[in-house]
Length: 209
Image (tube, rainbow, N blue to C red):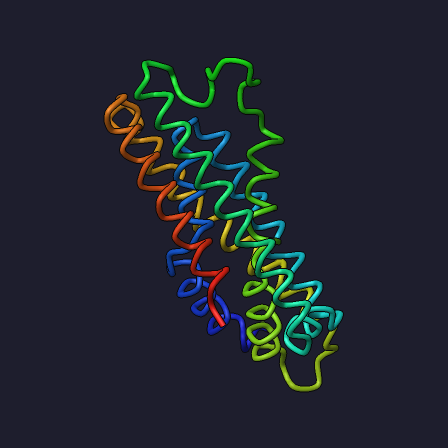
């Protein structure tokens, strides 16, 4: 395992640096506070680890082999992405109406740690591409002759822990700029941008072949 670890960590860095819906959600939730951002990261990486375990067990092969299974997951993922996007746009509208955003919306409970964790986990697990990617990505770094199942699960754990550290820098960066980014105008703009991006990604996932 030690012989393949440097190459694996380099590949993990390239994967984490590629922007995606998880990055958008982590940055958005980090505006609520570092705790919310870090719990979103932990939720997302729990999803990464679970996809790795599913890949090790061969379960993600179903998504690759069955067009129906993949299409079902694709539609579910698109609905989740669009739902998060609409939520962000609603938050921006409430702020524009003089509200304080999602945390102070009338009739809604303030965001909790569980909600942040659940959001990160749900967004990751609802993406069938993540499962198929894990199935193709992890086996490349299993050393020849090593136990396949155990090695895949270990690599999935290393991948998730590495990304926790990587995305924690995003949370830290947003925290450093929070005084600027939390101004009503800036926050409203960021909510609109993140909402638009998430909706666009959801539509793309829903309509792709």
